[in-house]
Image (tube, rainbow, N blue to C red):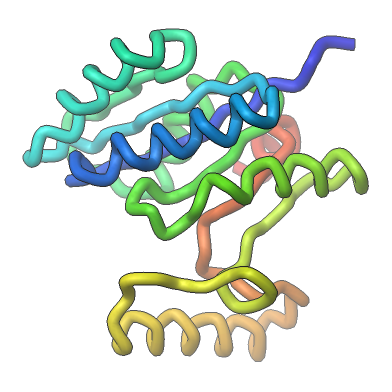
Length: 178
């Protein structure tokens, strides 16, 4: 049975300052854990030079590790994920934000949890255990908490963070969902 490969999708828009940090952290934790991975950067035509930074990172870490799948204009987060999935070589997909709101140190824990319980989806949460949000003002925290509260009340999904986007999926399951 072949080893698992993890495709980490990083949609970007004006993330030139954050991208080198998040990529460095991803590489660090994936290499330390000896996990096979690729990072797919989906840039939506950032005017700040994010794509140029991504190209430099690709030279540093290699074209086999950093895949660039840019789009001409800002088309939105959902379609960025779909675009990334279409180009993913891994049998698992990890989605996360490039703005450092999701710490890559948790990726090996996601993978261990998925393997241990054979889960289809592992979702990070900002609202329990070691979760949290950093650098958010009160208004953004209030909106996020409010949206999660209403979602819990109306949908009753038994998940603590429905609006977050730090997840691991089996690729085959994710393709069925979209």
